[in-house]
Length: 230
Image (cartoon, rainbow, N blue to C red):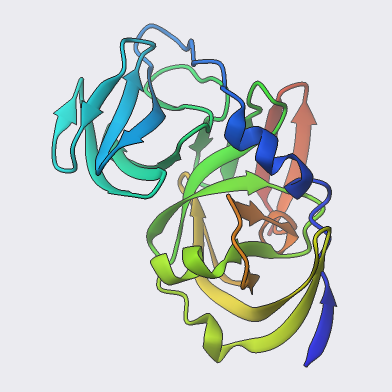
């Protein structure tokens, strides 16, 4: 068994805070729409759309243009303006339409534009192997990192990968090295991306340098722009 040092740049130390802290609602342009998962009532999602009153919405139902596709635990997958987003209780809202806000992303062919959330972290929805997930950008993580539960949900055959020991802030745990078929953020898709799957739970999928180093990164205040390298 190979030993692999896994140091996610301090992001994991703030995950508990991110889950418990209430994020500010988005205030984009007049045509932008935001949605936040405020809680779960059974299999129903408690949604806050555009800062309105919380509304329980069951899978298959639509509220103010936001359709709940599925729910599981403290997560819900919603469809907003034709795109699917993975929401988790306590996370920053996601938005679509004109303008942008905390935790939003947009893709422009070979460019990804991210805006920091109210907590200073860059979070964005995306896809792994075509399955929607929520990313936390972590420039200190050498590769994309996720829990076994997230890997199972996205159909990643991690147990066929190489077994490794992961050194984390909470001690050593077992993990697997894998290659992801595709990773997509906005309109930008990258193929054959190295990743690590950890046997323990993780609140987010860490978007590490196996994805980020394929881009030129520029940050100005609360905006991060990733431009694909050629």
